[in-house]
Amino acid sequence: MTRLNWGMIGGGDGSQIGPAHRLAAGLDGLYTFAAGALDHNPAAGRAFGQRLGLAADRAYGDWREMLEGERNRPDRVDLVTVATPNATHYEITKAFLAAAFTSCAKNP
Ligand SMILES: NC(=O)c1ccc[n+]([C@@H]2O[C@H](COP(=O)([O-])OP(=O)(O)OC[C@H]3O[C@@H](n4cnc5c(N)ncnc54)[C@H](O)[C@@H]3O)[C@@H](O)[C@H]2O)c1
Image (tube, rainbow, N blue to C red):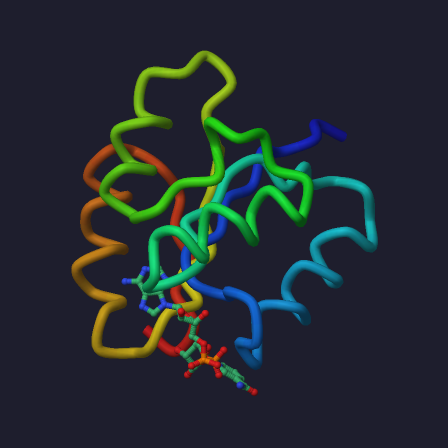
């Protein structure tokens, strides 16, 4: 099966659900964790993303930066998980869907 490039928004260091998603996504070998904007604090998100193995240019500080950074890459993420607080899901999910990414919000 085709391996998909997966991105995550939210799920930063110390978050409750982020680790479970990363663990589960790694179980079947079908996802490559390729990009993320993991924290409401941009510096913390960039640093944590790199600690998790993301390339420096794909450990984004903000989901808008991630959208712009991924949009025109040939190896752009195929889908994103939105694991931020609920009130932010609509805006983030709408923006990624409008750019033709697949998006899955936790508790949309
Ligand atoms: N905790 C659970 O057991 C559980 C179970 C099912 C679903 N969920 C859902 O998962 C989502 C996240 O829950 P949680 O418990 O992990 O919350 P959390 O508060 O523990 O973590 C939220 C994470 O999102 C980051 N974040 C906040 N705003 C951001 C933004 N604008 N851009 C990037 N990152 C941002 C925070 O820095 C933090 O790392 C919620 O929608 C929640 O309802 C949680």
